[in-house]
Image (cartoon, rainbow, N blue to C red; front, side):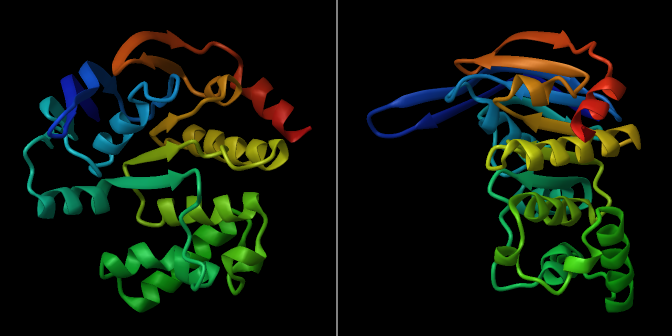
Length: 237
């Protein structure tokens, strides 16, 4: 699904050149759940932004579904992003002036989905994520965990091929964070492909593989062999 080879990202000013990514190569197959870890400044968020087509690489190759993304014009990036990628952010990025229903519906409007179909899809995803009773509320009326569920609903509403999660539990207490990890685990068990940036080794343990980054390079990749069923049971305690 995702094939990245020798990817580099250099930020330049008149006085300074900073290499945020250096010759990074990774493969993510359909149905994978992969975590990226590393200290601040390691390049993990830069890598996620390039995968999400929010930033561009300086060199190398990034293929999404066998299509080269490097060098793609903004119109092509926007199309690929809308058709294939769902984003879950640390800060939720909900629009305070819109209701829960309207926040979830927004990507469907951008994709010009007919109104009647939008209503069915919003109600279906809200029911699946247990927030049907919150559709008329506004983000500030919800707990952090509920806001993240709304953000997940918005990310899933267009049936994306891959979910990109940037510190999805970073602003949540342990209870709400556990709810979000349980949700991501359920999505993965139902076939979702997930790439998650996290500082939490506990959260990373729910993924199949953890990539460790430092100074813009990949230091190691390891398989996570903890029993996910046991982890989910722990979450529900």
